[in-house]
Structures are given as structure tokens and as C-alpha cells.
Length: 109
Length: 198
Image (cartoon, rainbow over all chains, first blue to last red; front, side, top):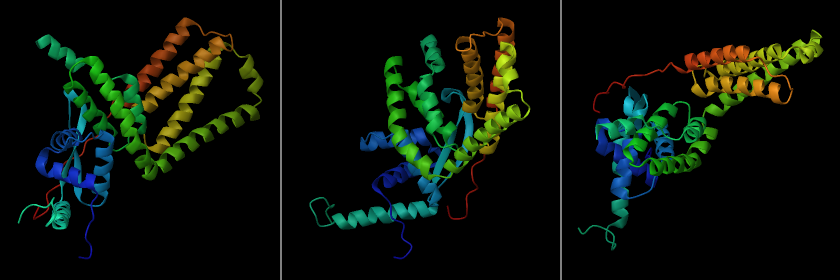
């Protein structure tokens, strides 16, 4: 269990959004994905702050794309999960499921 | 229909909100964040509604972005830039004092005062900008322009020495040109290569 990466709730949401988006994960898409699926009001600032933190921890990687007209000629910064990010997300999800198992909120086994 | 789509593509988010966001966003992600919000702004229908949303987004994002910026690697560079700008001010004051030109500057014609003030402001901003590695930043470029215009305004209104319209026009044109040149460069990088197993 040593070396386990612990994730906060919002970090899990951001990583899960990136997992869903695959190669098309950038700030606005992550923002919309979380809003659409969780109904949570998130800000672009919170998304980028979290992505920056996850990148520093080696869980995601990023690169700049090409500028586009709809963005006022500005480039997108794409993000994608690294293997370590997928493992951290999977471990956190397992922990949560394990904690809820057998309770009224746990999935029936 | 086509016309309304064109109009929505041309529509820009509120200038003040863009400036505020540009000032607080981390340097590395500034362009991406501004682009993401502009994209979202255009997706959101009516002009007034989208503008209100944009302002709210900027103000609420500040709650996350400002602490991240203060705790990140940038405060050192920002402080260094401010320090370099202040040092440049000290250099100017010492140079004027040592050369005995302080009185001469006070008595000089308004055109010379405006030119000197703009040179001072531009040199301080450029030295500060180079120190922060931000010579291509739009805020810095427009800051030079705004500073020059402010000093000309103060010279005219407070000092009671308006510069001639021809001189002012040349000065403003040069400053706008410098601002556009300074803000026109952009850098891009490439996607990282996939490592085995990813």
C-alpha cells in the first residue's frame, strides 16, 4: 500500500472527465463534462488549478494545440491521463466502493 | 442565419473581465484559459447573458487562481519584475539629480516632458518585462501605451502644459505600434510522445 496516491473529490471528477474525453480533453471540455454529468457548478479557474496540481504530481500530461478562430485565435492546452493517473483514479474509486459496500449506499453484491 | 452566426463569432467577451482574467491567470495557462472561456462565451446565446456569465466566471475563478498563483513559481518573477521597474526609476532619478537636470526638466517644454516621461515609463516597463520574461505579453505592451497616455494627460491637465496635437499623434502611433509588435508573438509546443504501455 505504500506510495499510494490519495485524491480529493474534485481531483477524481477531473481525472474521470479526462478519462472519458480521451485525446480531446482540454479545459472547456472538462468543465462541460463535469457540469453535464455531475450537475456541479465548477469554474474554469478551479479546473485549471486542479489540472496543474495533477500534472505536477505526474498524474496527467499536457501540450498546446493550434489556435482556432472560435477561441479568439488562442490555442487549447490539451490534457490526458498518464498511467499513474488511471491507477490513482481506479484505486480511489475502489476505496470508495469498498467503504460503501454493505451500507444503504453500497451497490448490491 | 449566416449573418447571426458571423455576429456571434465576432462578438468578444467583456474587455474588463478579459483583462482581469489575464492579470490573475498563471502565465503558462493564460492563453488556454482565455481561449476556453471565449469558446464557452460564444456557445452561450444572448449577448447580455453571456457577458454576465463571463464576469461571474472570472470573479469566481479568481478564488482558485489567485492562491494558486501566489503559491506557484510566479511570485518570485513578478516581484523581480516590480523590483527591476523600481530600480529603473531610481536610476532615472539619480541620473537627473546627478546631472543637475531636475530643474531643467521641470522648466522644459511640454513636448520634451511628455517624451521624457514616456521614455521613463517604457524603460521601466521593458526592464521589468525582460526580468519577468514577458516581453511579448499583451498586458505589458498595453501597459506601456496606457502609461504614456496617462503621463501625457497629467502633463496637460495637472501641469497645464498640453503637448501639440501633431507631437501627441506621433507619440501615440509609435506606442501603439510597439504594443502591437510586442503582443503579436505566440509559442506552441507539441504533444508529448506516448510511452510504452500508455
